[in-house]
Length: 211
Length: 211
Image (tube, rainbow over all chains, first blue to last red; front, side, top):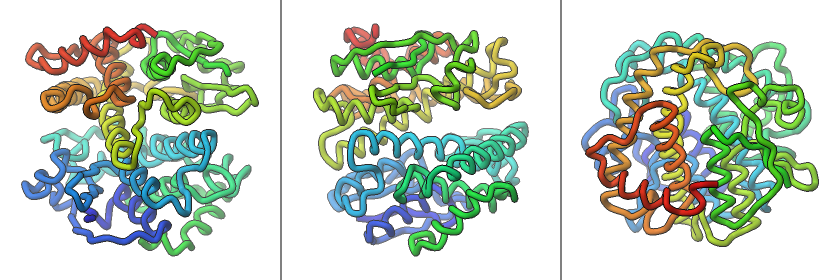
């Protein structure tokens, strides 16, 4: 199989870390989103939405979405489990994964995208034509990120990882959200979020974090 | 188990339809989001995020998120399958479900929420304090919905349902998105989207659509 990847972007990183945790490797192609490689005719033939990551299986099946790719890998490589092992844990991990996505990753993306000068006509990601950035979303996104950090901090005061006692896909999404928020969106973890800092140091020390 | 529900809102409807397709029923509590029932102290003790739907299991476990609730129900009531039966179908249905969510449901919610006078200080859903609506998001959301309809129309020219030959959770999300876009966000299916109209008539005729 072949992974269409982008080293700078948070969604491809989610899949790279997921694969590293499972011990999976495959052929990759690097595309630069800032330079618009994802909107090239060549890539749009693979994924007409123009979004990364995209995984193409050996039989040509295209999986065009981060969590869908993780789902496929979880099913084909069950160990170690990253998406739960019974009905309740699967549901709770999915819930926490989605909290990290909606509250963290989307807020970081919104804050970055609407402030980044080269994306002033790329207010939405992918193959959607020109969409003006909306400056008011930057301030809203910054406030959302502070709320995200504070909620995550409270949660991590009660549990080792984002969805309980085990490292899961929810930690992967949270790590990519925190790092993208800190660097690209310029909203770092607040000093008083000590539980987030403790957790971040622990998950960043895993070899997968460098994937 | 007990479902905290809201008849007017699209996310609780996703779970109601999912349950109806599975033949599951349970105790429900109706909350009115427009009146702010979801932000009452009573409900915030159940789900501190203040979001609906929320499912409380008999042992007190709280599932606070639409797709996580569906995942739990799929695991505990596998028939009929609505989220796939093997690695590839699970991934492809998840991908299509998320397309319907990000391209359709979120765009409809954005368009409605930022135009609805009573939500002028509730620009984001749930327990997040006062957040100003952003009028520019209405126009952007309307354009996103037209893009959503056109992509869905092209897709439904190739397959009976949103994720292939079988009715799945992707159809449920799409139906809730289309109806919420049409009525609440006031962006109905364009006349030239005949495949969407054909599909919409078919899925709306299922008994579950009235759940």
